Every structure is written in structure tokens, then in C-alpha cells.
Amino acid sequence: MKITVKRVEQIQINRNHELWDYCDKICFAAKNLYNYANYIVRQEFINNHKWIRYRNLNKMPKEHEMYKNLPAQTAQQTLRLLDRNWKSFFRAMKEWSKDKSKFNGKPKLPKYKKKNGRSTVGLHPVRLNIA
Image (cartoon, rainbow, N blue to C red; front, side, top):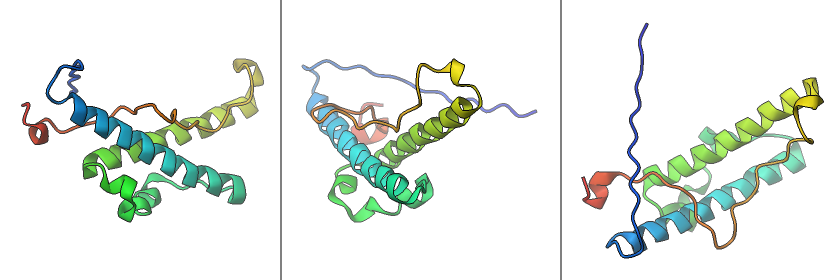
């Protein structure tokens, strides 16, 4: 049996850190991309009852300004996060249809991030020169 280990490091910085403005800008841009892509997925689901998966979604906004405002890996991870949220929604709907007593109400579509909010992002440390 093969075991795969993923290691993650979380770095927290305060407002006085030299990279604060850059990280804030990237987190804001990631939120904009998330909301833009969520709008596309929601409209397709509401109007045509189809779910746009990550592979197709990743091809759609590449020429869009919101995608270009982010490093490629960060944009891809943002779209993957959205895809996971939709996958969770559909799993919850399936479970809800089997046993409604497990839920307080019918599962709702993934929400948009707040207009002035931020989204978490994965940044490559080498690109930030903080290795």
C-alpha cells in the first residue's frame, strides 16, 4: 500500500509586513475570480441544470482580466476550491434526498464571497522570495 503525504505550511503576516499589500491584493483578486466563476457555474446550473466542472471551467476565464490578475497556480487553485464547494453541494443534496432528518433544511447553492472580502490563496514561496 502506497501512502501519499501532503505537507502544507501556513504563514501568517501582519499589516506591517513588507508583503502585506501584495498578499492582500492577491487575496482580493482570488475572491473576484471565485465570484466570477461561481456566477458562470450558477447560471449554467439554474438555466440548464448542468454542472460545469473544473476542467471546463479552467479553460473559460483564462483570457479574462480576473484570471490574469493572479499567478496561474493561484487562479487554478481558486477554481479548484469552487469545484470542491459545488461537489460538496451535490453530495449534500444526494444525502438530503435520502434522509432529510440529517439536515436543518435543504442544501443551498455555494454562495458568493463578500464584495469587500478576501479569499484564501496558495502562493508559491519561491516566487515571493520568502523560502
